[in-house]
Image (cartoon, rainbow, N blue to C red; front, side, top):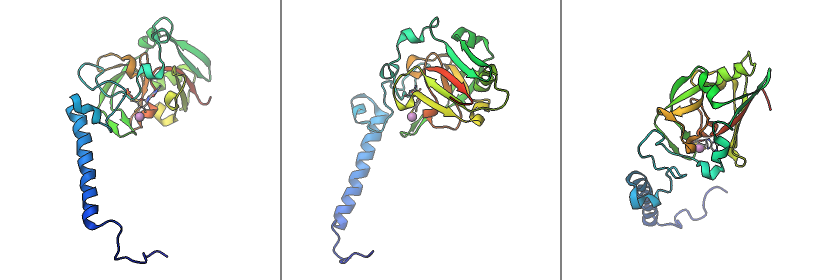
Amino acid sequence: MLTAPHPDAPTVSRRGALWSVAGGSALLLATTAGQSIGGPLRRTALLAPHGGADPGSGPGAFQVNKTAAYAGITTASTRENTWRLELTGRSGTVRLSRARLRRLPQYGAALPIACVEGWSTSDQHWRGVRLRDLAALAGEEEAADVYVESLQAHGTFRHAWLRANQVADPRSLLALEVNGADLTPDHGYPARVVVPAAPGVLNTKWVARMTFGGQ
Ligand SMILES: Nc1nc2c(c(=O)[nH]1)N[C@H]1C(S)=C(S)[C@@H](COP(=O)(O)O)O[C@H]1N2
Ligand SMILES: [Mo]
């Protein structure tokens, strides 16, 4: 039976219902105020981006989802002389240093980070190597999917699949820099993926390995 037996006997009075709606908006106002004001109120910013960095000033100054420390990324594993990008494709596996990546053609792309947790940044200015150029280096002549893995050992965001059309997009980068400076550790140094029109979770940070066309 879909109709209430006593439709004229609501469990919440109209006055009570209005109060709870008002309470809801007051709470929402308080949380967004915390987000935009900062300072002591910042603790109440329940819905704000988290992970540490306040979007303040400087090149890396935009929200961080998970920090390098949280993800267990050590400076030893990201040093120029130890870190390598491992690329696997039709022609086997190649390992590229960051210096080598820098000598490949560099491209820029202005793209935001849009997190499904409910925040997004304005456009950030990324610079690095095109994913499609990396696919070609790995021997892929046709568009191919790619499986991207991070140095991060645990957690659901340590890996992601990108579709062939995302790899082929000229704005899709393995970024080495953002806003005119090297990536900061929290934003994915030594290298991270950025792709247009995709949720932030696909923008893998601290990339270690890319496998084209399958795992
Ligand atoms: N390795 C790794 N990459 C990651 C994540 C992560 O936790 N680990 N978080 C993802 C999510 S959910 C988002 S929204 C973006 C956030 O990027 P930012 O922290 O540079 O703003 O990174 C993505 N890349
Ligand atoms: Mo996210």
